[in-house]
Amino acid sequence: MFVPTYLLKSRHGLFYFRWPLPKQLHPHRKAETIKLSLQTRDPNKALRLSRSLIQIGERLNDHGIAYGMRYDELHGLLKRHFRELLDKVRNEIDVQGRLNEKTRQDYELRLATTEREIAEGRPLSFDTGYQTLLAGFMAQYRVPFSNADEQYGWLERDFKKAVRSFLKAALDHDASYDQFDLSAPVDRTISAAEPQSRPSPAPLEQPSSTGITIEELAKRFIMERTRGGNWVATTVSGKEEYLGLLTELFGANRDIATLTQQDVTTVKDTLFSLPKHRHKKQATIGKPLAEVLIMTNLPRLSVPSINKYLQTYNDFFGYAHQHGHIKQNLFAAVAIKQNRQRLQAKTREGFTPEQVRTILDAIVDGGLVHARKPHQKWGPLIGLYTGARLNEIAQIDLTDIKQEDDVWFFDLNDEGDEKKLKTLSAKRRVPVHKDLVALGFLDYVQTLRQRGVSKLFHDLSTSVEHGRGRAIGRWFNETLLPSLGIKTKLLVFHSLRHTVITELVNAKVDGPLIKALVGHSQQGVTYQSYFGGHTLQLLNEAIQKLDFSRKPAVVDQAEHARLAQ
Image (cartoon, one colour):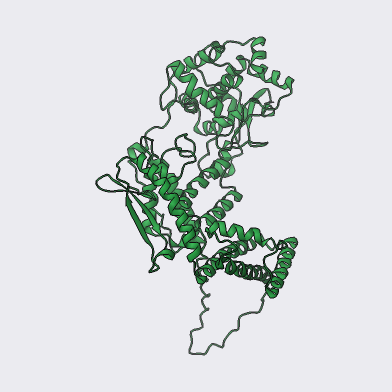
């Protein structure tokens, strides 16, 4: 069981408040923990009592550390801070190229001004902008000195020296790329007694840890994956949340190289106690980690969700190991093993023919009762007659509805603003089913074009996390299906996709054709490397085999006008 940062539960159920005493405040210069009984078994009461104690402890620590800080400790803090900053600048030069002329001139000017101030013993000036930097440094490391404190004089003087060293080192590293040592290595004469074999190449120098923090390396990791096109916006958001949890647990300044196997256990225990949707639910949003971990009666992360966190940490620490920041990947093979039978169990299922007819009756014939908005009618209908994903449907532009050789089709692509596809295979052409035509879909499209709008569902909003399809999915899952009495955990909007695939298989459509229609990747070298794609005629013949045994009703022009509003 995970023990929250400031609260400890004894084996008798009593809560204790524990507060770390920094070694700077200990008479023997060692870190210890103060423990105080809160005399309650109620977690909510314990939390309330601990809040005031935390505030007191933080004030005592801040002031105690500030007024008791030794000169060598302050010097070491500055050295660590600017070494990390220098590592960051060096890495940017190595990855992105030389400093641009403006930045180089700015560095040189700041260096000259700083050296002049140091030589003349002048205080920090507004010309260099170091007063703002110093204030940020003091806030980051929580050293609340005032101008009257002796430590502030130390800090102001050494801060300028640290800046000077940083600027010199950054400029020297940039200038090192001006030099090209092209001299060949000196060969020594091989005696006749020595074997005439080719000398082995010298081993590559192993990179050493740069002392980088978890937070800083996580930013680099996400930046590289994003620039490499590996992640879409929703993935980036998730990774930021997963990696942000490490910073919450271990602090913004924790060196990644100092993590131990015990810290891995702490991470796993934390994940077991972490509530679901912590940053979205009203009960937990905006609250500190220590507080939400002891909240009761909240659903916790599922094992698959925990494994998503652990897989992210495995990838991240693998990246750290590859770049020489750590000696081993502590998160390798720490995922939670699951029962194979449960893993193979369905998470979604298709609709039965009777359920499909119920949905069609409600949307087409009962539109004034159920599907009052255009996206509520045409969104599910397109899903049922194409098998397209929710956001693929929601982001369709009117220019994506095309005609070629008398065949109307949806051109599903990621061309244009706010359009994304899940995979490369998702870019495809799906012919418009004859039932959609009979229901008046093309007439509705023409009405929108006459109005001058650009998107099929122009009234939908978009978000980084959910794309444009959230309104359609929520209405379908939370309003329509429950009102029809066919809502289950396994039946959602995505079930329309399952239904289409099942119907196409039962209609004996070839597997590669089905994959081409629904946007699944093809298997085998022939299809992956040499196949140019199915013809529109073949795709049309395949999609028209969808038959939900219902004579479609034709919608009149008045209905088109109403839905176009």
